[in-house]
Length: 224
Image 1: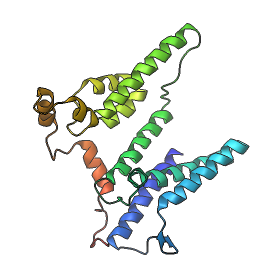
Image 2: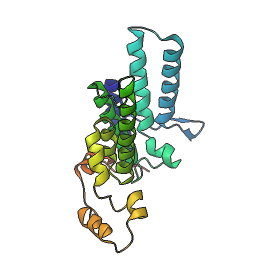
Image 3: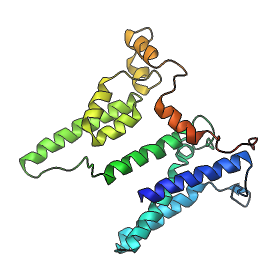
Image 4: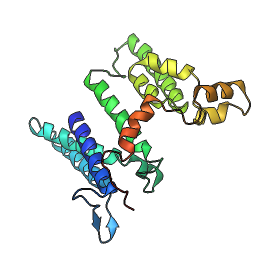
């Protein structure tokens, strides 16, 4: 599933960049004059593969086939996450970067699961209550980290609690919901946040997103 997800995302980005720059034989798909986004195919693949798995619960090799179809569908759907978040065609706009964020975070979660990380593993009996409290605190810290604009650390922190605790205790990014709500104009916290994250500052994550959110792979004038 994870392999199909990664390959589909890379191929899809390459094709959409080719279409955007007017290179190659690829063109936008349309039915009756209506542009059909590739998330539509992804949604159908998710519905079909999920229904088949839940209804028939097949064994190998069909289980692997379903996993591949589910990975393909998830990649096609998440690659246009920004579109179904904003209900608008923002694929190549600043808002469209959220699609790449969603795909990369999904890949991180997939790799953590592949490595055996499981945030809900626990013991029965008395130990179950301790595990439940720990998971609750971890999820709360992860949510705070995400609201503070530290999305990646918050998501990974679900699986590695110490990262969620550290991210929740650190400064919020200036434009995050936490900063807008908790950092009053002129406060020392807001000033520290602005010094830590000045306008135009590019993090490693931002530069990684740029590789997929900006049509640089192929040269040529953008097509309207």
